Amino acid sequence: MLSLSTLPNLPAECESPPVNLALELRQHGPSIVHFGNGSFFKAFLASFANDAITRQHVGWRDMSILAVNMHSDASVHSQQDGLYAVKEVGLSSTAADRVSIITSVIDCVCAKQDFQHVAKVLLSKQVHTVSLTITAPAYICNQELKDCASRVQRGCPPTTVWGFLFSALQERKRRGIPAFRILSCDNLPRNGSCAKDVLCAYSSLLDNNREMSDWIRGNVFAPNTAVDRIVFQPPAEKKGGGVYELGNGIHTSVEVLTEKYKLLVVEESCREGLYPFPFDGLPGVLVVDDASTFSEVKLRVMNGIHYALACWRLYEFMSTRAYEQRHACLGSVPDFVNRPLVAAGLRKMLFREVVPHLLEVKGLDVSLYARTVLERIGNPKMNDPIGRLLH
Image (cartoon, rainbow, N blue to C red; front, side, top):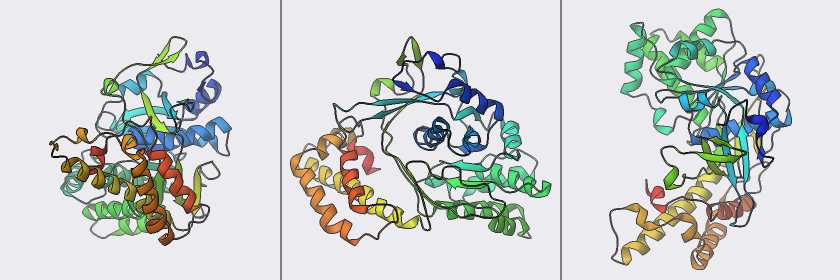
């Protein structure tokens, strides 16, 4: 099984930071706490952190991550010392794939089972960033948030991400420890501002005089970001668990299938007392004044293509009078995109009706980005059903 002890024995085609760096990170302890230990996090933010460790980028020792799920068990990851494989597939059936072993996640826990440990780590002075991939519905002040506030007022542990963040920030304020940065990597507009708004809404449920809410607004930095990477669905026989052979008799129970392209666009500013943005300067990281411009580009290009594909294929499928109530019948995205007529139609739509009306993004060629998106969604190795675009 993949672990720190077997890391030196992996075949050469499996890329990984040296084992001594992985051990040094674990001795150092977590500097980043991440909520939402799902496939996108594994393929995106943890991968960026792994790149920094491999390159020994400035501040790489502060890239060690504690990954937290609110409810699901983390024992599989713990058995592998937090290690797992990310397989980046090439853009064609003949292009070489790349397998990387991610060492940046030094521990994985379930908040429900180990809330005291999570709360303790969040109070550590060396934790400079709390990152999130908790999906857009979590950014709503709903009944679950009110129930969590009620439980905390009765002396019970928090049951939501916002409850953990508020309790940690309140105690850090009391102890004179600077607030951590909140880095949302969820795919919604102005995600950093939304995170701060929900946190303040939760605070107002507990703090009638709004003192803590005002402190959060003035002291907690939550930059807006835009994220871009396609994470593929695993083959049907691997869903729900499986064993992935890495070579030399070593296997992993956790492998994430993704593309080689990844982009993190983040609004960042230098503030007194704020730990420098650790991912700045890494390939694929773009620091800008306004992330919403790229968000609009991605929405119009990527989401626009997805919407056009879903409508086009659904219309075609229904017109055959063979429509069934199963989206799987619609086929896969690459199979449809790579039809000559469909490919030509998408190019015409993009470069006549979309790209000319997009604003420029500093550091990004918008036309090149649009061409790249067409190549990416047409990747024949991508197992992405068109039916998923309809949800």
